[in-house]
Length: 303
Image (cartoon, rainbow, N blue to C red; front, side, top):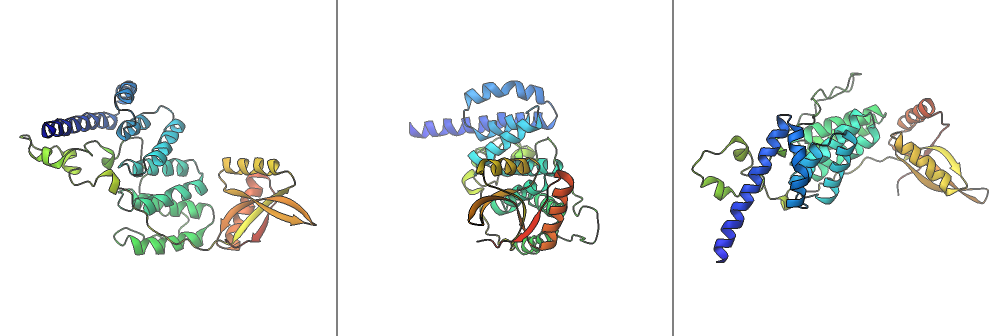
């Protein structure tokens, strides 16, 4: 009896995966409305299924809503075979919006947490370009050396002397990538026992590891970043927090730092962090130019 139940369950798994695979193909063909119409039913039928959650993100009508959904996948399903796809799309979106500080932070997570992902090359390309866009050329060179050691088969032959972006590989689009197609949970033994020839999608995913083995964290040492750009100091913490939020919305990573001036505690707002004084000065000039903020470069080593 138990054997019969297991066989039936296995067949159901293959059936569900095949259904999802068909839906992913519809997304690839651009039939988003057809897939979008099925999402509510799929959500009810397969609550919490990462394939359905990822499908729902792919067919969102607004990019901002899709990004929120992708971030939820990264947070709630870190071991999902779709997590690296979601992370790549978040990084691409931030890069395309010109939010280079945030883009660099998100893109650096992909090679660190998903080193086997097919998106590693593109993520590194965009991370390096993001660092250069915010004036962190020393950090960009440092990461290139580190990545070259960890991923010797990838292409890191960048031309740092050019004023053009280093990476010419295209950004991803709204279509699902090959590694985002269905059939990820299909049983290889059942698929091989079929009388019909395996489809290209089935063949592609026959040797994929289970979700629990998808995420692997690499320890990548960070370059020293002792310099910060201070743009204000407030007696009221709420006022300082308000400026931190404004900077974050403008694409700058900032934090509060308590300082003592003439025996009084103030909350300094500092844009963080940079490897050289020259990089920090470049950011200060950008803050002055774009947000009309006065600034002071400070050497505050990381603890």
